[in-house]
Length: 284
Image (tube, rainbow, N blue to C red; front, top):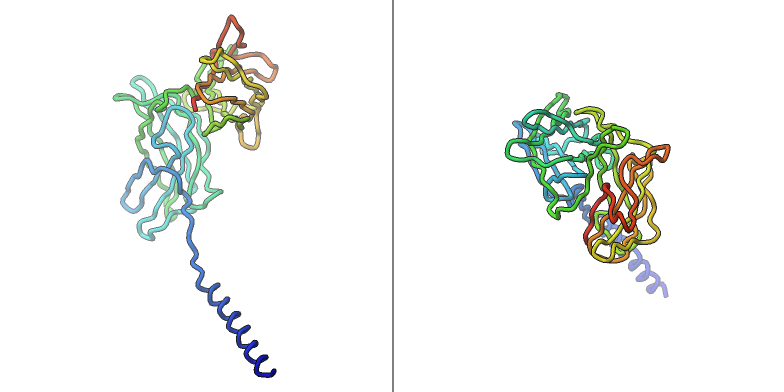
């Protein structure tokens, strides 16, 4: 009996030490904070590189989410305290103007600076976009300007509207989500800016955008349970619901209303008027 107890104790100790050894041998795999994104630009400087990432394969007219990483070549590490900011600029033959854009922040991942830009127009052979990036590197203030290419969306669908409202203000309304529409009630999101001058585009707060999706190829039928886009102060975006009842081409007819419910742009869809002058397009 004593011999059995002795053997049992040895087995327990072996299992315990084996478990500890397994725990100590566990391999920690570092996650890639830009996994799933496309590196669309890499700008090399004397002692560092600037990497530009996007979910898209190229920058397009409309809303673009952009991630930036700055790599210090001396340490071979990505900078986490760069305090980065940016300014997009369109250089036309007779004028220059900026674009609506967010601040850059690295609150989600310390080495990745995220933001978005709403490009109103594409570049061409004589007119082009660039952005100036300001940041700190090893205590030194840096300013670099990089030319970028902005093209029309590959699918040719309208995802941004630049227009004059009935109040004589120029607005930029851009589609954000859903990125992958489903036959379902989708979360619908857009951004709305006002153009004060060539360089200043404040976010428009507390307006409303009515939503009326239609299928022109299917008798222009609509869908139930849509919700108008209303302003969300936390995200500084407009959120609603978009009901899509089947796959195919959809025209999302919109009307922009101010805080007094006055219509600044867009019309109701009726038998006599099959579409609004303010709209987005989807096909899936």
